[in-house]
Image (cartoon, rainbow, N blue to C red):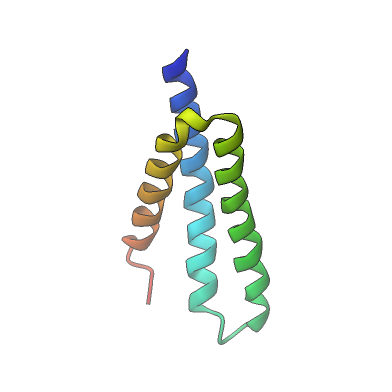
Length: 84
């Protein structure tokens, strides 16, 4: 059961990370064109921080899964080749 929770935390965190980092990086790239994208950066920053605190308080033993998922998702988004 412990491995199942680890896998669930890993997959959910990875999903949040992929979407969140893509939104943040894309917004940073286009901030000069559309200045209101700062709101998107703030919202996704809050969502990623919220996922950190949820895992920290409810699944503290699964922080490694959260960290691995966030790093992997950031590297995946960063290495897609769409960053200018």
